[in-house]
Image (cartoon, rainbow, N blue to C red; front, side, top):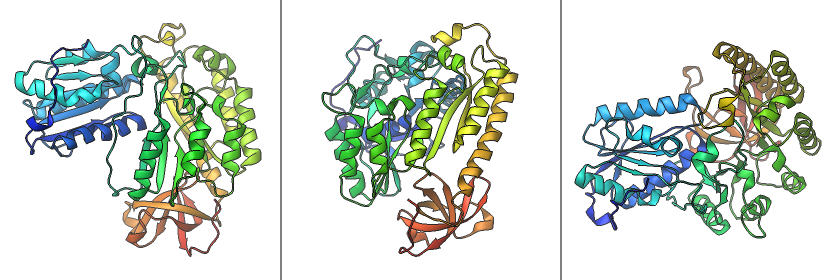
Length: 461
């Protein structure tokens, strides 16, 4: 689909006061990539404005993981076209990659570029501004050699937490998932570039670096003599007062070397792992094309708990997968309850055109999906409260990020502990972006109410 209407150098052509606005849907990877795309426009002299403002260029970074994500992407595109009909509307991301013709047919869309080839975006914008001819520039990711696209990010120290993308794509081909078609084969970012970005972020004052990717634990599989654990070892060796958080891992990627790093005294890795389960029934997992069974998942969780009793383990679960019986759903419910997971991220199954599961018989009704999701969300609240209660009376290290938006708690700050509990406590504004110790006093809903304690107090983690 690549257009031949490309231009070369663009920076000299752009008016300094051109305005660009971004709209991001979906995952942490999309959030990271939007900031990287902003860097391209910043270098070209653009001014960034808020989503609701009128801009010269709109960039919508779309999601295709669920039907709702695609629908919301279309709604946002149409809304922005109505707001500024003369602006250049750019649609990128997973939905643009998997359905470029559908996206291009939306009136007002000027540029469709998928999940690769985005370095040329400024040239495409320049071409449309001159000719007003729409452009589709979407590569077939399975016909080209997978190469990690390095966009680069320049950041400021106005925030406390930064995403660091280390990997792209996925080779798993779960039967329900469109992501391999949206992102292509798994490929790793060069280790030296990850380290360089991490060093820069630490120097800018960021205290938490979140390692993210589509298949994060697959990092290094395409690199000679390198691995995900090796990357973590190098990142831990960087100087500075910071912590590392792993965004998500497949349970099959949890191994002895990783557990050993987590166990190290003074480890900078947060004692929190997100391990997607997706279903708690072996027949369902098999139909999903997952590479483990419930016994494997349970054994890994138990092994982690032996070495790290207070580790927070959160998970993803899909409800109403084709053919899932009431008994199989209940089996999964009981498994998650028994494992005492810290939180469940619940997703009703969304039929994705082009995936094998879309052709499966015994599709589950939306009513049943919603009922099962409701039951799991109620379980998640119970599990969250149960996990948090363990820490009442203990001091946790917390990274305050912002004021707590609640009229009842004026002057309170909120942030996450190392083990991913949201903590609310009273403290001075200058503590934002600085580690401090907070004594957990009580649990209220999804937050822990705490009290600031002196630095000499010993933190749990």
